Length: 286
Ligand SMILES: NC(=O)c1ccc[n+]([C@@H]2O[C@H](COP(=O)([O-])OP(=O)(O)OC[C@H]3O[C@@H](n4cnc5c(N)ncnc54)[C@H](OP(=O)(O)O)[C@@H]3O)[C@@H](O)[C@H]2O)c1
Image (cartoon, rainbow, N blue to C red; front, side):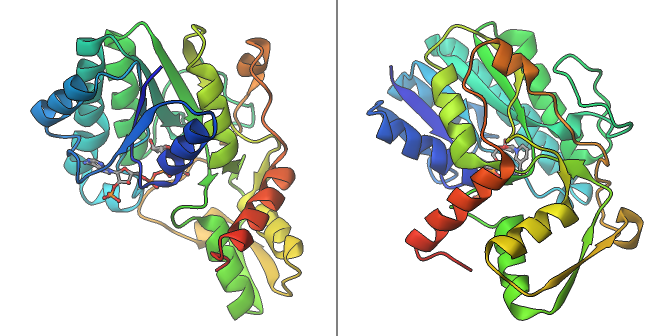
């Protein structure tokens, strides 16, 4: 099995490549300097030269607030760009993994989202990721469509690293307390991705670390894990306006992946503690 990973310099792509290496799976990571996702000919030429058995498509336009100002660019990368990857995968008969998000749902109610719940994205990024899902679902049969949430990884900026920095610099931080979801460690998600691609159990799966919490609760968990004496003040989303509307309910049901006998994801606290140790080992603490 030979695997091509897009978004190799992003949080998730970087960890997927690390996990494939650990398993001695032949693989290659690509990013913007290899080809731009929006250039269909370039994507196809690259894929036809490497001829992977699997493409793990982690690259995406992920600047959620900026997307509200440039919806066309966002749709071109996440919608048309994904279609380019789908066509290239089909041209060499490769399986595909597409990474999507809870933002394809409305964020209403309190019930955890199931894989076949109706779509209703409320921001530009969510709509563009839905366009990517449609490209995969409409043309492919051999795909894993994985929805995840609140990703943190070793390679790149994320909420945990921001909180570690603020926890050192400030005595108090105000964090939203009415958006509920599951923070997800990209190394844990990468393990599931690598397990999935060696099977034929295609379909849509929700994969997040176990446990739902608000951003404020997650902040407290981070401060406590590193004994940072910074007070976390919970605030409603209304007090922290952002250009893109965020879903209040990002709870995702992970029952389907467990029913399919994929190893369950560890609890959020366990994931966070391992992540913090890795950050320290790599000297990337803050
Ligand atoms: N982060 C989250 O909380 C979260 C939650 C749910 C789902 N997801 C999904 O998970 C996947 C991985 O997310 P992530 O956090 O690893 O993202 P990330 O760190 O932002 O990495 C995305 C990568 O894609 C590359 N890219 C963007 N536009 C491109 C283009 N036009 N052509 C080629 N490469 C391009 C970026 O390169 P540049 O840096 O050069 O732009 C970057 O290396 C994405 O599909 C995302 O939508 C993420």
